Length: 279
Image 1 (cartoon, rainbow, N blue to C red):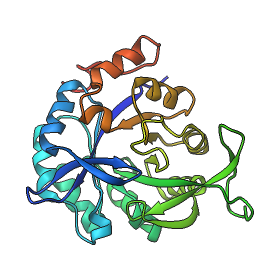
Image 2 (cartoon, one colour):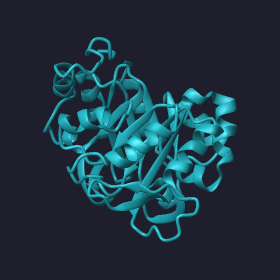
Image 3 (cartoon, rainbow, N blue to C red):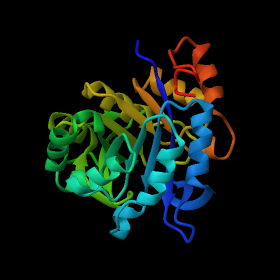
Image 4 (spheres, helix red, strand yellow):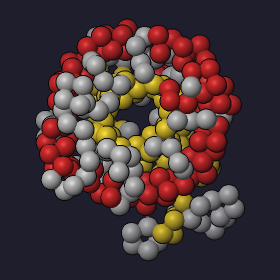
């Protein structure tokens, strides 16, 4: 079994200081969590396998990603850095990678123009192109054409709808079918966020995590809802995810990356040691 990755996520918004890490519930009611560069340094020290930096308001505000913050972050960490938010073109991707990122995450722009995935994968390689998918449960299953119906934990049928612009705009697109299309277009990885669970501490959305993980052959990162290492264990064992992303539990000091890895290790899930993770 391949080692499972633990990935802290830095959700960043533009402020008077140039950038601030924030965390909310279902992408709303944001509260400040700290300086992105200082948090990145700390997670690097703790042995995180990777970092994800998401400029969560760039697409909605119609601006480019915060390049200066990315450059300062990349100078301080020695683990893979994925950057997303406001990336709309090949030139944007080139700029982000030149700023020190190892991968880019494209979301809204990929939904609006799927060819961006294939074009960028051909130029930069699939290993650099991560497709982020934000989705919500949709309980209206009357018209199930082009929809993958999933049975939820309570036996209720539902499908998962892709949403864009930071969760503000529903698309009518089925998340599982979109994940499969993204893989076919050349995406090297999927970052899957269930907005119903984001910031709730209720655990990852196992039904959609498992469905997407089983539908594609590329790695899937589970995101949204972790309150502790037990939820990450569930994402790996029940959700079949390759990596688990979390924000609040790390930002507010509830858990450390080391603590999560120790929990998983004693339960026989393969994780990289802190030394192997680059510290």
